[in-house]
Length: 294
Image (cartoon, rainbow, N blue to C red; front, side, top):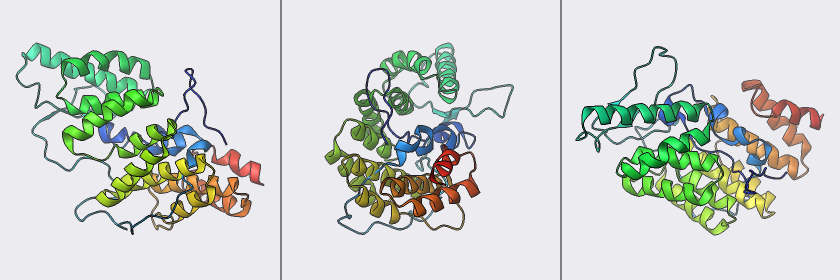
């Protein structure tokens, strides 16, 4: 199953970015990010070779496996004021713009929140138009580089996305966008760099959702080069059997079911898609996949 191309001929990645880190729980992974956003090809992950070392089975204490957000202290954050409080809003650290005149600071916050609105509506061209000049003018605001990098990722501009996300990672020490960076390398055919980031993730032991996204990307990269059996092994080592399914669990199930189908194991593939349908009936193209396997 191929990876769809954008207009420039680049392959699209699985969409492992997590906008809910900015916009709240309404921006669910199955709706705004994760393997489901990009369809069946996202499950075509890793053929995965065995890991050189055992992977931590649980996130460090004090961190929720259900959240993918920064744990470090933030001096000050500003939320935009909106009439409709149900609309997710972007949280922005204003540490590096506090010295600006109030009018300029307010304009900055307003523009960033407009970019957030466009991102949630998948108007990524508009997001880029807003963020490109802001990133140049306010280089020290890490969140700008993060959101701009995710936008470029969604536009299929892998190299540019990597540059922005690397700035964010270097300036914050936050590893939560490593799966997105790995998927950019995957789209560029750099299996060695995908594996390098996957190893870094495993050694760091981040939240379960982060490492699961990294696992999916690594498995997809392996499957891209024909190692479907390895991808299945890698995914099977993840949190497949859970009592309470989170978004990242469902994405893992989808990836695994897709690889089962590609490997010709239609019985396991059907069971995997059925499991997803039971907890998330509208997830990606699960209904169609089941119909094709019946």
